[in-house]
Length: 216
Ligand code: E4P
Image 1 (cartoon, helix red, strand yellow):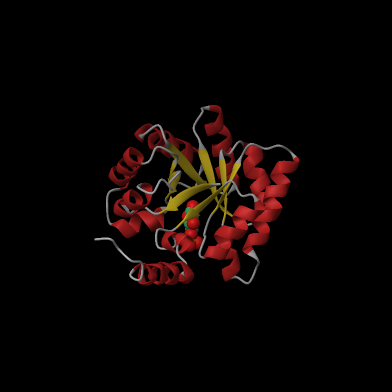
Image 2 (cartoon, protein in one colour; image 1 turned 90 degrees about the horizontal axis):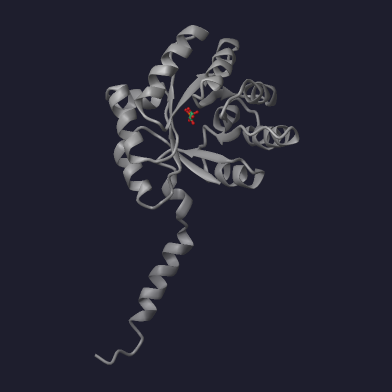
């Protein structure tokens, strides 16, 4: 499984990247706005830190606007992936961009049908939003399992990015379901490697070590 960081915070990216855990980065307009920095500057900086794909989202709503923006975003760095919303205009943009060799990540996917449409149009990645489905009382993780099966049935090469990940359970169940990627907020990452029994175990070992006779 690949781990992406769902953040535009450069310090967070550098810190997690030092652990060898960052295969890519995803951003959206909300995440970019949180940093209070110029969009182009921050995307270029992230692309220089991370070797893997870095998603940058278009703002336009028509196909022409999206394609135009996508070409600009893709020119910023070779590892930019253009995030396109799951709409009819978006699907046409994805189809056109795939023919130009520009990688896309179709975002705001909430059903298996939407995921299949994105894959068929030529998306490199598709991003089902688990947490936002949970927010409305649906079972977000079901979408990951069902979309994984649907894409595998027809040998689509589109990779599933489990997005809107809010908990350890989201990450673990997405991994068990075989999602290719999970994009994880920086604040959640430490919970993936932590456990109270690990901390307790270390404290106990250090305490017991004091009882070991030392020659000097
Ligand atoms: C990533 O591609 C998504 O934009 C992000 O995971 C959305 O997360 P949220 O639902 O917590 O805002």
